[in-house]
Length: 128
Image (cartoon, rainbow, N blue to C red):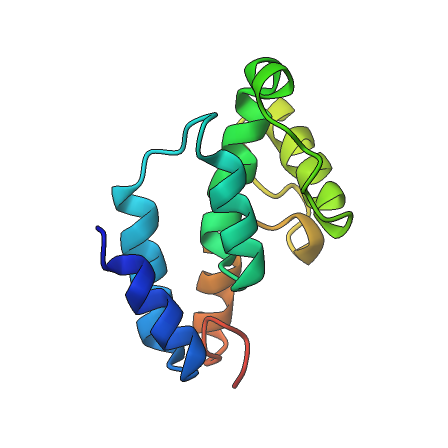
């Protein structure tokens, strides 16, 4: 687990997309998001375009909003993340968290989007 971030950083630096995505998935799987580490993980995810990690942290903040509001400083959160936080909060209020509109990409879950991209023959990062 300690080296996963190093792998993500190196893969990002050298644009090795599949390695970065795999390392991100491993990091998400092995990391327990808490109120104490949520902001660090969110800012890290935003800085390196780690969509899956960002979604997991946003979901955590939305699901634990009462505790997060009391214990988490949102002072360092860039303004562009506020829309994403609001979407995550809205999704947490909907049962099942699924995408009601088949093609509403603005609120589509990262895993749903990656499956659609794969079916279309595109890389899961949307580059091909």
